[in-house]
Length: 583
Image (spheres, rainbow, N blue to C red):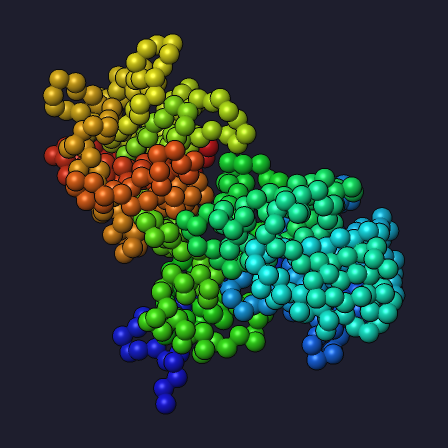
C-alpha cells in the first residue's frame, strides 16, 4: 500500500532543507549558531517552579520542550534598565495541534500561584531553585486574578479541563488550591483563576493580573470579540502595579474577517514597518515559507519545518487532510502550514508575494530605471517606486502616509521632491509617471501636486525617453492622470493582470519592503470594463494600497519604454555598483 505522503512522479521535489518563516525570537540564532536568549528573564524561575509544582497527565514532572522553554524565557524577559517586563503582551501563533492550550495552562498556573512577578532579587551561585546565577527571582502576586477568556464556553473548557491534572499534590496542598469547574481558588480565596466568555460589560472594571486570549482568530464584531478585547486591554492597563499582561494563543487567522487576531497581527506589522509605535508586543510564529506547495511531495517536509518541537503531530495524517479534496487549500494553509492566506477577493496572497522577494538584488549607481509616483494629499498614501530596466526588479524608494494618532496631516511635498531628485541623481531614469490624485492646494489653487509635477517635467523632461502625455491639447512629460481616462484605465488594468501572472510564475522580483508587502496584501480584485484591476476594500478603508498601485505602474512603464522606438537608440551607461540608501 502506497503511503499518502508518497509524491506523484510529476510533482516538483521540495528543497533538501525547508526553512520556515520565523517571527519572534524563539527560533532565532546568533552568529555562533546558538539560539538567542534574553539577558535577564524571570522565565528561568518559571521553568524551575513548573518542574516542581506542575505535572503531565501521566503524573511525571512538567517539562517544556526546548521551543516552549525558549518562548517562556522571552515572554518573561526583563528589561535590564527598568526591571520591568520587556513585553507588555504576546501572541503565540502555531499550527493546529501544536499544544498551545497546555502551554498556556502552565503560564496561567504560574500567574495564579507561582513566581510571576520580579522580586528585585537575583539568584546567587547554586541557588536551590536551580535558577542560574544572576538571573531574577520571582514571587507570587499577592492577589492574583487570572482570567481565561474566549468567545465561547467550549474554548475555555479546552484549557480549564487541564488544571485538575496539572497541579501536583504538593501544589494543591501548599497553595490551598480549591479546584472548580469554572473558578479555581487558592490561599483561601485571595487568588482566583476563572474562565470567562464574551460578556464585555461583566468584565469591565476587573483588576485582573493576567489574561489569556484563547483563539482570537474567532473573536469577531458579531460575537462581541472586539469589545471584549478592548475591555481586557483597559483592565490590564489600569492594574495597580502596572504589570498585568496578556497572552494570545491562536492559529493563523482568515483575512477579511476583521478578527482580533487579524487586527493584532496588522498592528505588529505596522510597528515593525515603522508606521506605528511599538507598544511592547511579542509576536511569535513559525510559518511555512512562501513558496511551499500543497502536495504530497512538499507537505511532509513543510510540516516537519513548521511543527517545531511538536513531534507528537502525525505527519501522514496531516498530509491526508491536506490532499483531501473536500478541504479548501486556503484552510489547509491556515491550519497546517500556519500561513495567513488571502481573503476571498484579495488580489494576491501574502505568501505568493513573499516568494518573489529578492532583497539581495540591490540597486547600483547608474542603473537604468523607470519611476512611478502615486500622489495623494492626506487620506491615502503617496508612494514612489522604481523598476529596473535590466530585470524588472521593483524597488520602493519612499512611502508617505498619515502617522498614527495624527488627525490633521498632509503629505510633505518638499520631502517627496527631495527623494525624486536623489533618484534622478543616482539612477539613469528613462521615464517618470506621476498620478496627481484629486487633492486641492488651497494656497496655490488647483491640485495639490500640480506645481511639483510641472517642475519635474521642466527639470527632467528632456532626458526621459517616454513622456506621460504626448498627444492631445495638454502634453506633459510626467503627469499621468488615470482618473476619468478610459485609455489609461485600460492600460493599467492590463498591467495589473500581467503583474499577477508574473508574481504567480515568479517572474517578478522585489526588494521585500514591509510597507509594500502590506499594501499588496490589502489590494482587492476589482472588475471594470477592461478586466481585473486593484483597489481598496472600500472607499473609506484605512488599509492602503498605493504602493501596490506604484508597483504595477512601474512595471507597466518599463514595458512602455522597452516597446518605444527610442529605447534601442539610447546611449548606454554602466553602473559603478555602489549602494546608497535613499531613505
